[in-house]
Amino acid sequence: MRCDEIQNKLTAYVDDELDPTSRAQVKLHLEQCPQCRAQLGEITQMLSLYKSIPEVKPQPKDIERIMEAIPFARSHQKKTGLLSKLGSWFALQNRVPRWASAAAALIIFVLIGTFVFRPFVVKKKTLLEKSTTVYTYYEYIAKEKQNEAEPKFGKYSFISVY
Amino acid sequence: MEEQNKGIEKMTDTDEQLIEEVKSGNKDAFGAIVERYYKNVLNFMFHLLGDKELAKDLSQECFLRLFQNIESFRGESKLDTYIYSIAKNLCFQHHRKAKVEKSFGLDSDLNEIKDDGKEVLSDTASNPLEAIINKETLSLVFKSIRSLPLEQRVVFLLSEQQNLSYAEIAKILKCPVGTVASRKWQAVKSLKEKLKKVLKD
Image (cartoon, rainbow over all chains, first blue to last red; front, side):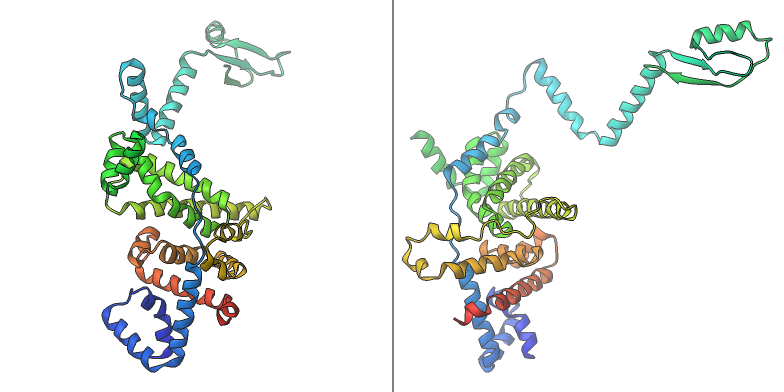
């Protein structure tokens, strides 16, 4: 094996992560090659220098701070009573995909818009009329029935007012 | 006194026992997990990010996430591997956020080293062995690690600081073992170059 191939394996050799065959090859090469031995020496020296950096010592208040932030009591309370049951039901909703919730909300919104709020009809100003008139939907239907024979001018547009 | 005894008792439990107890609502068991792993997570975050306060905040977030996900922890991996996965994800998330902020010209600590380790080094001045080693040198080592690409830094720290095997690191990073070996070698090679002068002395 060439020196550069051996040197690529030196960290794995130091970490004892080579398979037995590669390990034996590297070991044999190191015995014969002073350059690779020097490389190995530099690596081990650098690693021991890193290991001499002292550890950060945690303060007891750091651990207290973590334990205070853990919502332990809330999530492990015994679930009794109507409020807790409602809470569990809402917790179940977390399992429903978000897109399904959004679709359901949209359908409900449209249904409410259609049945609860009455649409208004705006008859736009035409050449024959002097001003724009606004009817409720039911007024418009009644008016249309009355004027069935009359010719229609202009276009109608529907808007919902909430 | 009784509380203290309870804490000591929990410290001797295995990770698996503690997890089961947390799942059944035992707060002391979670406290024992935090006691067991907080120091390692804090040091990992600190060396990875170079900011002690940020490391503390993200360590807290790490244990919060562990708690939130403990029900889904089935023990397929070891607890420490699971904790380091959360910690690594938080650091990557922070790094991405800092990168975006930087690209928009906002304040960012992406390349800024808020702590150069000197504060930590001065804590141990009473130890004569460590006092012999020049603080400036250790600070340089600390800075050199921070200058490594994030992927190499994570591998280097998990291997050298947390003493994890390449297989465990590969599991955390969800990459092949060969990638871990190559990143570790790249990291060591860069550090060796950066610290050439110090190593010769």
